Amino acid sequence: MSAADPSAWTQTSGNSCDGVPFALPAIHSFPPFYTRQPTEATRTRQLELWSDLMLAYHQSRQCTRVLLDDLLTSELCQNKSIHRSLSREFLLEILEALVAKGAGDAEWIDGTHRECLIYWRRPDSWAQLIYHWVTETGQRGSVLTLHEITHGDMAASQEFYRLDDSVLRKALAVLVGKGHAQVFSTGDGDSGVKFF
Image (cartoon, rainbow, N blue to C red; front, side, top):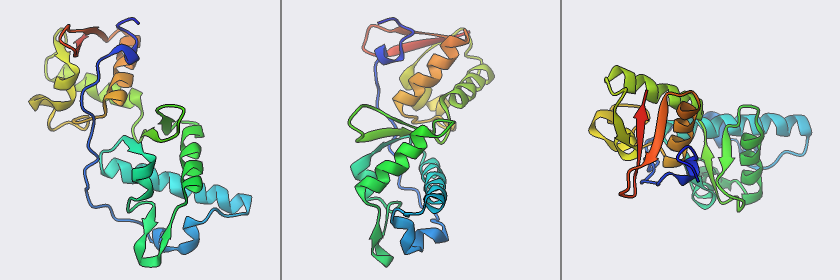
């Protein structure tokens, strides 16, 4: 594996999906919303609504990595006040719709379909934010560890603070591809990034 291969980069701790309150829309209290609709046009609209809600919910919580089992028991996928929840099968269909969406709003982490990345912000957009921060803070030409980028004091006020490591690696791969960064192993189990 080469240093430019994101899968070769050491992983540090990812984001924690903080329990930030989220104002669920009125449709979340509509019982048929939780049942897969049989009519194609209605189901297409239902999947669009669930997709939009899924992205907004995870953005509000700054969460990019989700476990299917955790999602099934979350406030997003169930409404105890109306005794409704998504079935595992329908949740998988919703996530598949996000994966298949033209912009690729989600990605399965492996073939088990138990865990996925939710891209409420695409890796190329994260790359732009990170590179802007590096430039604005005078760190071009410097070497930073992945941990410093997402957990360092200088990054604490940035949107990418505590960003999931898989998404960070994808964003850095975009910068490597544009010639703005080089990623290498630091020898102590972490990875370093030099920005140009």
